[in-house]
Image 1 (cartoon, one colour):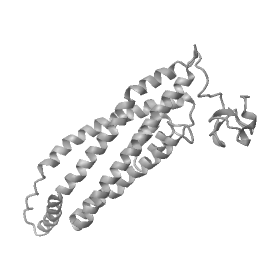
Image 2: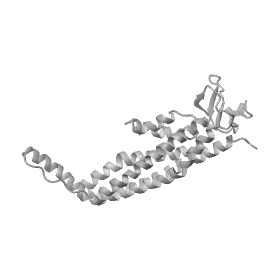
Image 3: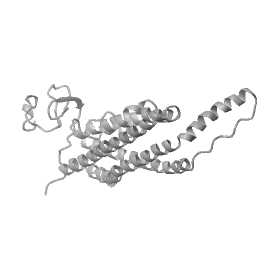
Length: 270
């Protein structure tokens, strides 16, 4: 048994990692640094062990992830900036939204009277421009998913406890309802338990849900029916996006730094 592990249950200052299960039910159990977790493993896994001839993929995986680390962290702010521009574009398009709302009513009225429908309002020129710009966000999201898959593979090779496989962690983004919580779990699996970055990741995820599921739709509705409330929600949207950017950048950077340091610790000395 590793030195100091005998005193783990008494808080002997042993760092987080895999250690022999004190209950004897499993081979290994994850020690968080302050208490035993529910994560267990039937085979030896140690993120701090020296690389053996069977472990070279760990360095290869981390190097592959590192190629995208900086780009992904920076792209958070690109995504936030595009979102803020979109918020102000919605504000500037309030007249179009109202015309569109009245047009729908006029169309239904014309159908009931068997009359030709009125012409549809013309979208502002910036709406078409933003639609083209939004294609850039799709490219950013694809690169992010590639990075997430690589980061999950590094975490798996390091022996971090995980609830989802790297492939399912990416695929769950596209599954309705499941994508309300599972992507967060998949990203959380990229960090060891009790890592400070997990909290930042949680904050970023909650802000993302609030922005996309609540504030965004409410802003459009308010701009049509209650412009004063819509203006307030525009300001709230901007603040939430900035807060999301701060926390998402910190969380993704934490994953990159943790993996770089963890892999460096496994490198053979001399």
